Image (tube, rainbow, N blue to C red; front, side, top):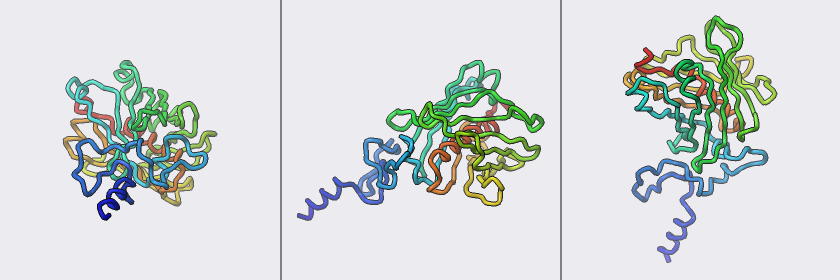
Length: 268
């Protein structure tokens, strides 16, 4: 009878474990680090009313990790290749994968200012978020035509924007809703080189009196930071923040990577 109860408990799943997490009574298997969409998410991750499809995994996350994949071909040839990112939860489980779509001409001649589209898919390959970046200026001396991203959730439905605001001393951005109304502000440090330390962009209310979260570019060591394009970011937000705002903050991460951290030995 005891063995039958244990079998029933195992078939129901272990309480407290997220989908894709390894069974502590079993040895972990290689490559079991992705959130498997075939499993039923915990109750708190199930879709709620009007929750965009595919964003149920974001609904209660307070930490989102973004890891840029190393492009060995670009390192060897000294060329700019399309960026790819893994998006993970706080346990290191991959929940989304992002791929940049851009043409070689733009990557070569426009470099980090290039226009591109980033398509974010879940682990089943379904596209859940689209980030569009037009060709824009990027200079503290130019107060017009600054950087902007368009966020679509699901693809084809615009839910927000990330817009750069002119400031001669600090990088500043706003997160906007679909009507381009400012809802949150992102304020970066005066120096973004990140030598031997993390770089934090604080997410604040519009009056800048309250900080509700931050986007951090993690320092990954001298060799990685100087000789590769592989960057790691962490988004710290309240768990109950609207999922479309979390999606916009993921887009903001990509924008910051292009603007401040997209470099390699070839570009020094």
